[in-house]
Length: 578
Image 1 (tube, rainbow, N blue to C red):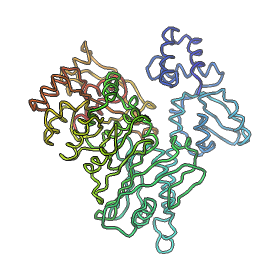
Image 2 (cartoon, rainbow, N blue to C red; image 1 turned 90 degrees about the horizontal axis):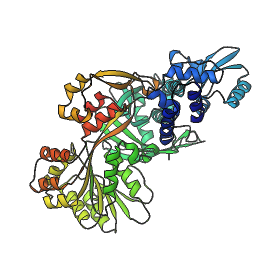
Image 3 (tube, helix red, strand yellow; image 1 turned 30 degrees about the vertical axis):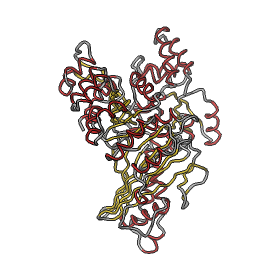
Image 4 (cartoon, rainbow, N blue to C red; image 1 turned 90 degrees about the vertical axis):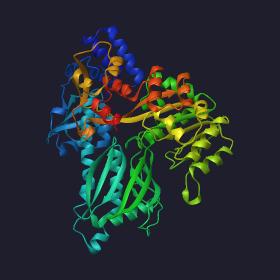
């Protein structure tokens, strides 16, 4: 990738932007730690083709747009994926005499010389943008999916001794490898009458990945049970366990972990991945769901969760208080626990004692005492919380308030000088308060102990690799959004709104979306809301008051992200109408 300073010089020399305008964009690129090239193109400041041609001209090499080409597998394989990814290069055409090489940085003479020496052919260098190289690199991932399927034909009709020799460990290893390559959060292995279906959840959506012979299902289940330290002779009861995937020079499986080759930088920037395993008996066999708790999840901060600057300030102000309760609310899978972990990362200092009671423990956190709920030993949320209170904690995290008993203990802990973080199933911030009333928490306790309620949903991000601008008629917004909400976002009613959407590419599996981000509404207990709590007002009355007090609703936060090009209107309407 060409450095920002060089791109800046090329833009100025080509007179593509005034210097004063460019200075601000350069500062933005530095602040976001991203490339100047991608910012000017994504913002539509300089047409992509124009910039590509000017950069190529400055290096005296031809430009190439890889997305217009069909690159065959044999051409792609002339350069190993690791080398191509590390050096941002793609072989897009080859014959006996040489290869045509697209490079994000044509000044990288060292890699060109290395390839000439290794391959023994001439190399013709072309310039391709960082975005185009990224799209082409995704073709390697398309090839990696075949590694699972390549194993299957040899065993699909096997029986007897041949079936016993089926490479079960290799199949399991490849499933994990492909899941991580594609940023899957969950792996589903589902037995059906005549086949086993493997599905991955990617960016919140399940995708069919491969169909396996049903005769292999028991062996795969057994292998995963061994790795997860579960009983292999138990087939009629649900079992929960965990295993670990480790990157290193060793390749393969042991009974302790799954090993994938690579240093960690070569595989999704991971060193190890914890996997939570759930096995349940269903009609056709044992169903497996595995949650991949990747290193990436541990790196979440309040900043990159998707909180606006204003909401970020609210959170920081409330978590600075030494006592009270912070509640994250929303449906299952909306990122509530991730938000609490991001807060804990800020609060996790040597001078405080932090303890958690969770079901299950999602991520190990250094310096935090984490307790796993275990109903077999009567270690419930309520009993675990009672124990924690006697451990001299400053900060307590309760994975979920599920019942009146846990709610009462949590509120009492907050009243006695502890900062309590917890989650609750509620549709929005305002609904939380009546829910606590239903759990027999006295109104005066709710009003005095709640610091902050964070309601959230997760939406898919627009894939920037294939994003395209388009004009959305304002009437589309008017069909689905209340006039008062639109009035807050648009001072003057426009005819149309410029938005972006992904057209679909290999990087996003043709979905138009890549990765996810949160939309939020944050409610603090103002004087007006406190009065409504004491009078046991309903959720709509509380929401109305919170909006008067300045609360940005989840819908409004989502629409702001649509206008900013982060997600789409369809996504926001999908999650806010659930």
